[in-house]
Structure formats: structure tokens, C-alpha cells
Image (cartoon, rainbow, N blue to C red; front, top):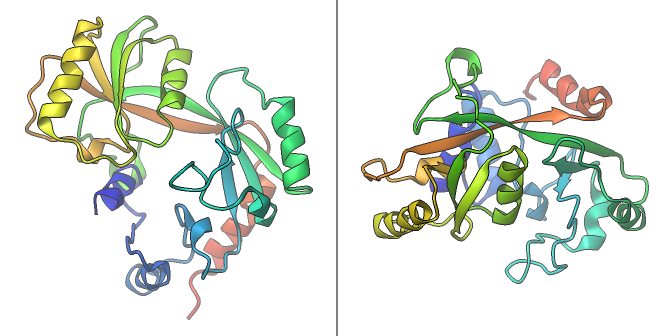
Length: 257
């Protein structure tokens, strides 16, 4: 349930989130209960019993195959060779002017020949207070702009904490400390208090957490430093109309009767 809340809080209100280990059952609930015309699966590629219309695989341009091992020894959910099943490879860039390394492009040519690619830039919109909700019709939350040189401590429970450090530092923020907990970790007050104390000792003037981690943050925790939530956006660097055409067509048709 914590994972479902983490995804739901980051989405507009009109988007329903169905959480179930049985993805087919979750899909049926979304269709029957909410009239869903399109089903978007997070980590859906690992569901071998499902057939998809579109398969977008997001890759780290610097380490597209991680350490080459499947979970739990590495980050991969499917063997590298199955990347050729993708409808589209999405390279997620995190710094202005960053390019996909030529070695990665050559690797993609060999591993998934002919699969279209799309570059997307993650942007740091600013930070906001804990618990801020989207407005009506998915209106974005209010955010405060960051200031270059802000001294911050990061607390995260995500799969690639080193990318978070790189992303925030790339925006000109002075990252003094990063307490990286395991992905989807259940945070407890004492360990968070200890991490914040270390951040303060390192010179941090505020603590930043991710939107994914926000739902797990203990609301009754009292700290010496302000806690802010990192708000991000995505900006396509390549034309997306052709890539989105099947999705828009499915939405226009509506759910099957």
C-alpha cells in the first residue's frame, strides 16, 4: 500500500491507481471501476503473463545495463537481451547539455537494433512543503525556486541514490550529505533523526526528500531543520508526437465494452 500511495500522490487526481500483485486483476478493477481506457504499468515489463501494446523502457544513459545482473544482485528486471522487445527506449537525462554517451548508443544498436529512442530531460522545478496536494484538474503544486548554493542534506529511499545526488548538485545546489536508505524503505523516526543530525553537522540548512518518499515520511516527526519535497518535471528533447499517437488514439476510442 505504501508503494501505491507513493505513486498516487504524484499523479493528478483524475488518474486512478490500482495496486495488486496480480496485474490482470488490477487492470480489470481499473477498467470496470473507473472506466480506464489506457492502463499504464509501472515495472510492467517483468509481468511475463501480460501482453502490452506499447513497451517503453527507461534507461540511465551512463549505465544502461547497471551492473548487468538481475534483481536482487543488480537493478535489472529482465535480461539485457530482451530489450529488443521494447517499443521505445527512453534515455533519462538529468543535466542541461548532457548527451547520451556514444558508447551507450553503440550498446543500444547492438542490443536492440531498430528500436526507436527518445531523450527526456528531468528538470528541477523547485521544492515544496510536505503534503502539498495538486489543485483541481491536476493543476501543479506551488513550488519555491531553488537558490544556487543552497546547503542541503538529502534523505532518500530510491533505487538510484547516486543519480539523485548528481541531479540536485547539477542544479547548483550544495549537497552536504545524503542518507541513502534502501529502495521503498520503511522509515522510522529514530533513524531519520540520526540522519538529519548528520546532515546538520555537515552544514546542511534544510533536508530534501523525493516525491516518491514523501508518503512514507512520518508526519509527527519534529526536526531541527526544515523538510522540503523535491518537485520535478520532464521535458522531451526529441519530437514525441509519433510516440504518443497510439496512446492518444486509445484514449479517443475509450475502453472496450
